[in-house]
Length: 265
Length: 235
Image (cartoon, rainbow over all chains, first blue to last red; front, top):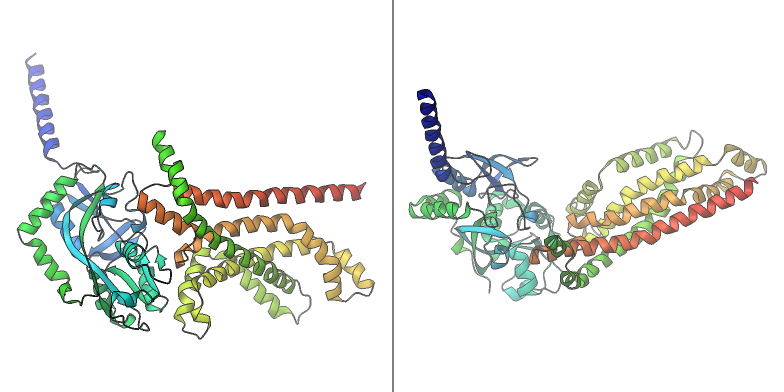
């Protein structure tokens, strides 16, 4: 009888411990692991080798932020590849959180959750070597533009600019960069830091960056709609802003003052 | 159930997406018509080359075999990337400045010509050698025997598999979206991403199905006709 009581006490204690552990452990898909998605390799944001759905040795600003968050939550990060074209489709996600330079918009918020912003961006205009340099937004109208599917850049072309030629639309960022490189496309409209970093990494492939279009976009990490993890990751990002980590990482990875890129009007 | 219907078959989204997807589908239609015409002619030529007799024709036969082996074995999406991004990168005057539509048609033609060549070849080989010999003994030249005796029988026999390959070609026009051709899939994708609804994909699927069903029935009809004719001859 005594033994039984001890056993009961022990199991009660164990249940109690488990309960407290459960309350403090973040609600991730796999216990002890933070499954982090990155999109098409983007220089300085998240760049690595893709093997199927795995991201090998990714490096960049978003990777450092994700690592810092995982560390603060006592989780081991696991990197996976999450294609952009599927990111905002409604439904279950194969990741806990995904960082892929996604601008927070009201429309996307209908199908996914966003964390607080970890980066501010505008749209940049990357020219091909053959293209005539535009001096205003009006000049862009007559050029052969290109964009990636479902991006704010494409939206800007279709809804604000209304160019005379149909823009070329590519599924992956890499395909659009190739199109600019080989001169199929005069100007690729895409987030300034992405095109600026790509151009810095491979300056021989492209013409200049004609300038940027001020759109005041903010990047947020993407989570499944209604995820319990969203406020937790947001709080961590806020903390990383406060303790100066984000400022330090921006200096480490970009060291380019994007506000110095001329503004197209 | 309601969510399933709403997500895949919402009447409202169907109506709104329809004009856009239709505009895109016209691009698919144009691609398939041009590619099919080219494939029919080119594949027949290559199949004939592959059947040429004699040692002198050896190199040509070899070329035809290499071509069919390479393009039948390469996934269309790779050929599309090679043509759509590779050819413009060559910077050759005229060749490198064509539209993505042209490159899409080129990729489709390259791959499907390889398939259809094999279909034609099977048809040509199915004609009994005695037919050819009889024609030659009547004084017809090799080409005349081919033109008036072998090909009419061969082509008639392979029409059903030919049409089958064309159904494949029609559907594969959707793949060239990867080189930036704004066709039905791209339009459907644009809609589904903007409104988080997949009815637009269903709209595109309906267009493709509507196109293939008449073709499938027509194929059935041809098979039936041939059976009737051949049975009638046998009695």
